[in-house]
Amino acid sequence: MINLFEYQNKVDIQDSFEGLEGFLDEIWNSREKNSFYSENGNDKIESQRFLQFIHKSNEVKIK
Image 1 (cartoon, rainbow, N blue to C red):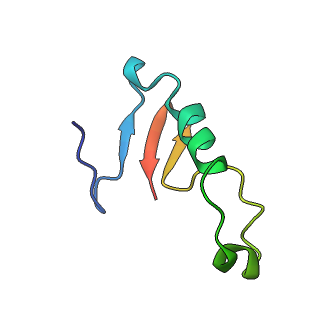
Image 2: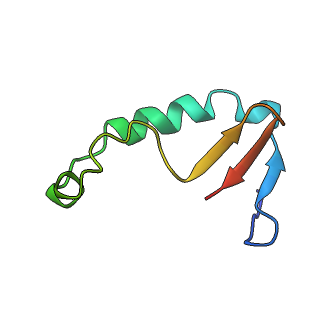
């Protein structure tokens, strides 16, 4: 288990993270849509917004 906090919110991407980004995006896209999100114009978000995969530095950052 990896604990990330406000002051330490990045960790190096490990081999065990392979496929995680696609998996999370798939779950996000298949979530039940709520009228709250479409009323605010947020229905166009196509990827999850909890983890940011920084491929340039090979890190994962929490949002």
